Amino acid sequence: MIISVIIFIISVLLFISAVRNDQRILISIKICIAYALLTTGWYNIQYNPHLILWLCNITAILGLILSFKFDQKLFEIFFYFAWTGDLLTLLIWPNPVCPPLETYPLSWAGFYLKHTAPLALTILFISQGHRLNSNAAWIALKTMLAYAGFIAIYNLIFDQNLLDLRYPSIDIMKLFGPWPIYVLVNVLLALLWYYIIHAITKRLKIIKIS
Picture 1 (cartoon, rainbow, N blue to C red):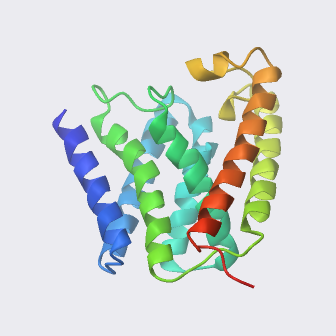
Picture 2 (picture 1 turned 180 degrees about the vertical axis):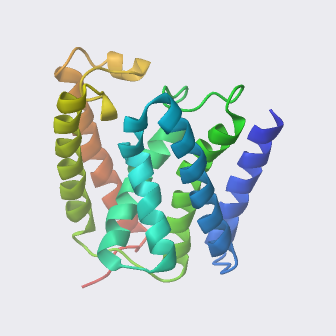
């Protein structure tokens, strides 16, 4: 219980400092992402090494790279990945791939920070003046579809269920129907969510004006 409160407070402080464009917070975000990758990676290796290819790990790695050297195209992909996978993961609990708090508290903390720290990093970049190109949503969507296609093949080869492409692992997906109907519903929801993000970023003037 104490560790969950501490991690929540840390995450809130990351967001507040990012909004205020406090440059000192960048090192804290780097540390949080690195800690998250190490602790959850250690847990994944013990539990299921294939989970290292899960989207949140890819997003965290992109964030860590960007925290050292900014790249516009990578930022746009990272932005949409974070505000899709990371945000939705935080909203949907319990999560079957989350380390148990009772037995793996450090990895649980890493899992939580792996989703909050990248989101805070996107806010920091925006606070610094970085903006998305008008085609950022399309570029990120194509990258996401390519990643999903790779994972679909990977699942077949290694008998895995990454991204829940073979069967649903959370209750809300089970409501969408059997395979492949629930997969199609997820794809449609992803398209809708990308459009919503695009609309919000446009309204907030986070998209560059050409």
